[in-house]
Image 1: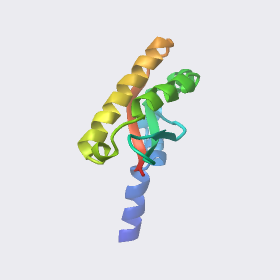
Image 2: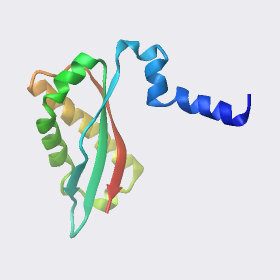
Image 3: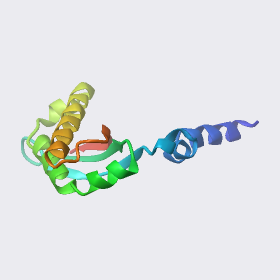
Length: 129
């Protein structure tokens, strides 16, 4: 098999499309994208834009969680606002923020009776300006 075919196979198997078709995803994990979160950071003219995806354990739970997007976005906006942009430049600080975001989203979903199914939260884009 040529290098390009091996690379194509590798990319397919490790892409979300390949995962969903591999048989492992038959239990129904879902990645639920949120609208971009854009907030002001500490200081003049500093902004954070974060694209986030939630890992949900089933389509049924994903549908329940979708109903609560406004309070989820509110929790994230409140968490991200007025943070120090220099601190967020450090990888370990972004990981702490990701963990705090997962915790806040979990609490929000529990408050609205949809606390089951959320497995993880990922930053798919993180821009500080």
